[in-house]
Image (tube, rainbow, N blue to C red):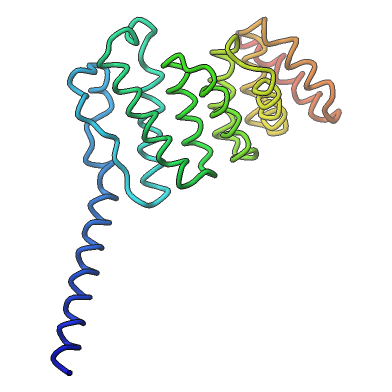
Length: 221
């Protein structure tokens, strides 16, 4: 009986060691991946699977790489099958993450970015909305969402436009965010009427901050 317990204990220790080793190997995956600069030559990046570990940190590292890669390709690049395959792999990884962690706002954003590059308009809008719902107060992600939404504004549905308006209100409510919005106001005439309508409904101190930053951005050119 005693020997049997010892064997069971040894087997349990071995299983724990194997599980720990596997977990560590998975966590190291983002650090062992090919440099994202190589993705510009998609044929040489075809075997990259964008694997990640179980931690949110590991997943975020992979998603950040995917986000940069997906948006780095030009529309002409997207004609190539190898490029579409890389973007599709990122889309699948993002889908895997949100399937188990639907509150991962950044993974939803990556799913949106990959979808719009693959001309999947419905998936793009749905993922962008889900990103905002999952992280309504995460300003660093809201900045990315606004950039993506404005870049592909003609493809937004009415619901996604309403979702973006929530992000715009969030950004205007902070000092750093209002600076970014003011710069966009100066550089993008089509954006002006929409952001003005939003700011006009905000408290007076935010309206003043917005106008001050617009003037500052205009002077800097």
